[in-house]
Image (cartoon, rainbow, N blue to C red; front, side, top):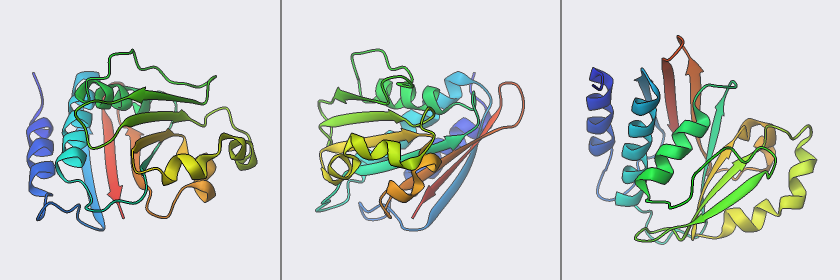
Length: 177
């Protein structure tokens, strides 16, 4: 059974659609009380993105996921993948650094999942050719530990913060510039 926040989240993402445009400077806080809610919140979020494509988008959509270990970043990306009907299992690409998943029936062609946890210096990410990845409008990109490469992320990057409140409870803060 989903909490009251589940219904609020669905409603807020629906109301956030303004004339098929993603509103600027949106900040939304949602409380998730378990993994299933986190996945469901992710599915509402991705539907919001898919239902409100930026007209004439010239670059990929980059979303930085920030929070402590175990805060729910990977579970959120799993929820995104499930909502986008990704066939493969999604796991944190900590040792691979990045993994792509082809998408069908979406305004994006690829879901990219990056994990910067193991990076000690921002310069280590430069070999990944992120500029090219971020510039392709076919890409929907989620960057776990994006705060580790903050200067390499585009200025249009969205941010989602995950804060641990209790053992299974997370405060998820969406910031859309």
